[in-house]
Each structure stands twice: as structure tokens, then as C-alpha cells.
Length: 138
Image (tube, rainbow, N blue to C red):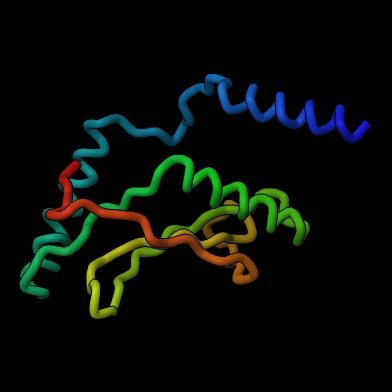
């Protein structure tokens, strides 16, 4: 029975990995993304550069595999706590080390997907993405 279950889970994983999904409702077009990024650069990035005397990071890259791994971890750890629909809050942050003083982001698990949900401090947050230098414009 256990062997059959393992085979089933293995095949299910392969099928789900290769299932074509429809586009999520919250996707935005390239034009909308460019407008949002341009708004950020014009209303914030230039002020940060003037205040700091240097450009700062304005994008962070994670691989899809890294994000899937983290989301699976959050789902698993949340389920152990009886949380069935956790969320992720993305925080703007900055390093303060000899190696870097640049901006970054980190992902923090929440107890639900509601915007007012409490953070779930029982699960570690996620950081250490990479960023292009000089910063990439969208």
C-alpha cells in the first residue's frame, strides 16, 4: 500500500508540474508594469539617489524554483499550525553590512491572504535574492 501511495504521489507531482495553467486574474500587462515602475523611479528612486549620493537597488530576482520551494515550505509549516490558506507579505528592507547597504525585499508568511492578517513569526522569512547592477529598468 505504501509503495502504491509513493508511486501515486510521484506521478501526481509530475502531472501537476506539467499542467498548463490559465493566466491569474492579478496579472498586469507590460504597459501597466512599465508605468508602475516609471512612477516608482520618478517619485522615489531619484530622491533616494540624491539623498544617498548613489543609486540603490530597485529590483530583486528569485528563481521560480526558489519561490516554489519557499511557498511549499510556508504551506507545509502553516498546515502543521492549522492554517489552511496562508499569505505572503513582501517587505521593503535594506542591508546594513560592510558588504552592502543596498535595498532588498524579504517575504514574510502571514496567517491568511487577507491584507490585515497577522504575520506568522513561527515560520522563517525569505531573503537573499539577487539584483542587477546597475539596477535594471523594467
